[in-house]
Structures are given as structure tokens and as C-alpha cells.
Amino acid sequence: MAGKTITYNSLMEMARRYQVDENELFIAAAKQFMIQRNVICKIEKQIKEDGGLVSSKEYVKGRENICAHPLVRELPKHADSANKTMAVMLDIIKTFGKEPVPKGKLQELLADE
Image (cartoon, rainbow, N blue to C red; front, side, top):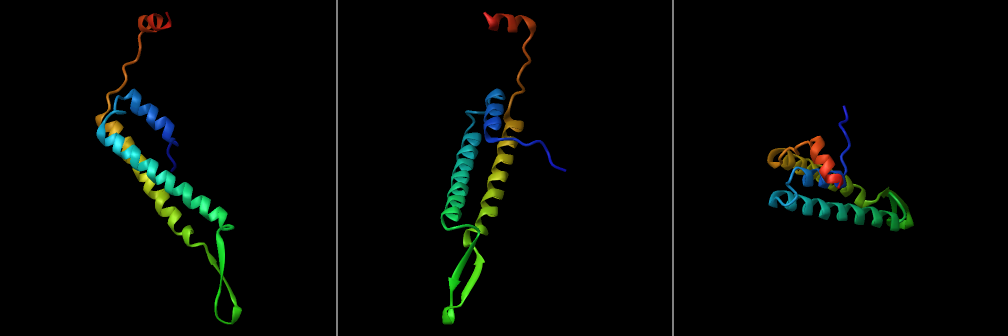
């Protein structure tokens, strides 16, 4: 059963609302996620530049051997790592965050001015 999809931007906004956007653990996890995201982008770019998911190598007597691109095995590992890092970021928000206080009618009126 799939849960609600959470994007990086929505997670950062949630961190701000729950006041953990300056928490050292959260910042470290966010930096780690960005590194993983960059690695995934580079892997995808390299696969695209190399012509797709399959590659061919020439072996003995000029025979062509078609095989999966070597980076295809790496992509799921990095994607899984990035997903786990996002889960850690969400746990940090839940553990250290302070639930935002809903605004009352008076506060909403004062904010509009």
C-alpha cells in the first residue's frame, strides 16, 4: 500500500513549519540527500549519453555481446539510499519538530494588515 508522496520541497517546507530547518541533524540529512540526488542525476545523464540501458562489447573473433549498461545496477542502490535519507529527514521532523499552532481569527486579521 503506497503512502502519500512527499517531495523534497514539501519536506523542506514542513521542516520550516515544524521549526527543524536549522536543526544540525536535519541539515546534515538534507545535504546528504542533495549529494545522492546529484549522483543519481549524473548516473542518468551518463546512461543517456552512452546511448541507453544496453551496451555492446566486442569479444573474441569480433563477436558482439550485448549487455546491460554497468550503471543500471548502481541506479537503484542510490535511489534507495536517497529514499531512506528522505525517511530520516521525515523522522527528524516528527521527533524534534514542534507542531505549528493554528492561527486564530484575530491573528489572521492582524496578519492581513
